[in-house]
Length: 281
Image 1 (cartoon, rainbow, N blue to C red):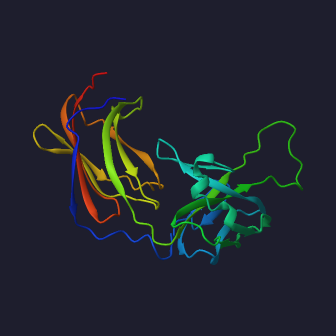
Image 2 (cartoon, rainbow, N blue to C red; image 1 turned 90 degrees about the vertical axis):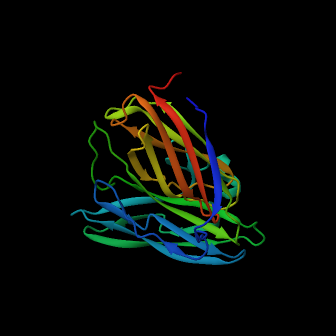
Image 3 (cartoon, one colour; image 1 turned 135 degrees about the vertical axis):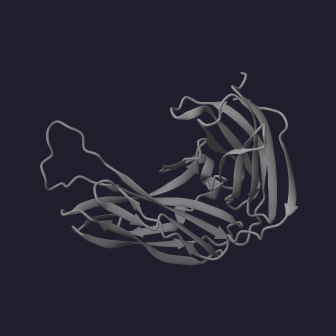
């Protein structure tokens, strides 16, 4: 990792707090290559201790033959590459997991060709749980048709779709800060061979999602690369790395990366990093 000087940030009251309370169901749909699809991919809901919430996800099958799937209840984490990870148990997520609150029906089923079916879930929040945002997921794995003889040789591909749940109990205050920007060398075609990594500390007990812009400016003050601040969810009580690949239009020279972001805590934060390419180890 290559870290450079001149990191600075200042805060200013500005954009309204992003609303994490209330109920929001994202409209996105995930699709597997064999014709099964899942909607929505993400569910966010605010619940009180001791309460329950029932809803459903839709599994669709666009193929001309019957499909089969199995449901799993999973933990969720975000790795250092800002990629969601889903496992049956992740020890680091124990204090934020909601997987023990959920029941699902069906856990395994067939789905007819050219059709869809609901998968119903119920969350029962334990009484007395502390205010925070909890997370877990349902994974839907395709299964081979047991009625069809499998070839003695070959590989059967099992594909997984996931729907992620964020359950906010009470009204935990968001608290986040851009802590560091660094430059890392990467081996990736069609890039400058480097990426910037913005590290955001979530010191609170609810999720953060950054909304803002990231610009890279050359020595002449020209913006040579611009994009949205990475919208990756930043789970509670951790520091999350957010990589941004530097495009191949960045040739050797001096640059400034400028980030301006609202992390949902009622503040606009600004951070800047001056760096050179090629970077010195």
